[in-house]
Length: 293
Image (tube, rainbow, N blue to C red):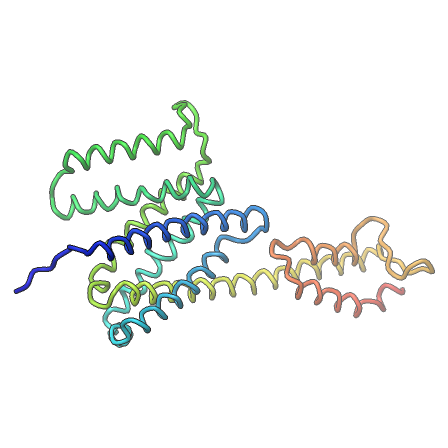
């Protein structure tokens, strides 16, 4: 039986090095752009995670369909592997994406990426437990250096203070743990159907679940928005704070009532949904007969 070999030609080594460097550069760009979206544009980390997972899933599946379509078809027909896909989507993909983006939000892109690399420690712990052995000398040295680096990042060299927000540190460690599961949980199915196929299915499932959760949250926020704005409208009409006069049909001396409700509907929502504000304007037009009393 022929043994597997890891020998590569110089050309394949150069291609591999180039792809690795490109992947690292794109990962850095990804973290920086995510930080800008969250800090400057107020984007929700969960929304960014949803878009990333859907796009990455479709990209992976397109690559799998172009290179190894039979493996993609076999993975889809293998119903017994669906629980692994679902667990991988929830634990490996969704948890990693959400934790990483929140770590960026609370700290910065560089710190979050460094904390994510601690996933190697969790993988080493799993390997040692699985093999019932202690870490070797090099592994012990690596663990010590990683621990010292994490302490320096968290304290800034002063062990009496914590320079990083505790939430950012915990999100970063949670991201490292979730990233480690990606190297452990789907190993068997990846060996059977390939990296592109399994990653594509997990990312796509995670993105669909996350989008459905976002849709439910949006509906809940819209109902709460309409109820809150309606309360402002009723309160303004009941207390007769909205007057009609020659200078203007709608005037609110105290800053409440109908104008206050419309302003709150347009600006008070965290996501600033235009549809909610438009709905309140329609409701305002219907209430004109009350304001003329």
